[in-house]
Amino acid sequence: MAQTVSVRLSEESLREVDRLAERLKTDRSEALRRFIERGLREARIDDALDRLRKGKVSVGRAAEMAGVTLYEMLELIRRHHIPSGYGPEDLEKDLRVLGPRR
Image (cartoon, rainbow, N blue to C red):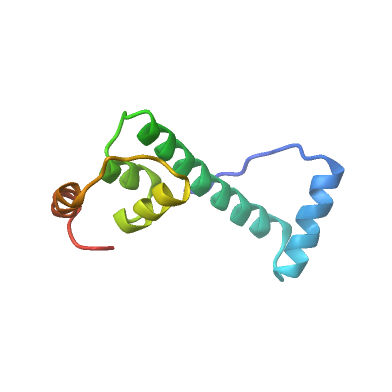
């Protein structure tokens, strides 16, 4: 169930939201929802990568936490230069655990 929340933004930030909302051909509320969802997705990915970097989770678990496929997580690991020690055997194991590609 959706809930209404209040947030204080600087006038500059609000102008930017309105400008982007206009470019997206949507209203301020919908634009803010989109921006928040995008930010939450990035925050989930950052958290999963941080935990992976610290050795607290496996690559498969990091993918689940981030809400991405195993293949996407492997690409993120490569892009962020995170040494994973992840080999073909690990991939096969994670694929069995995670099931078919989403």
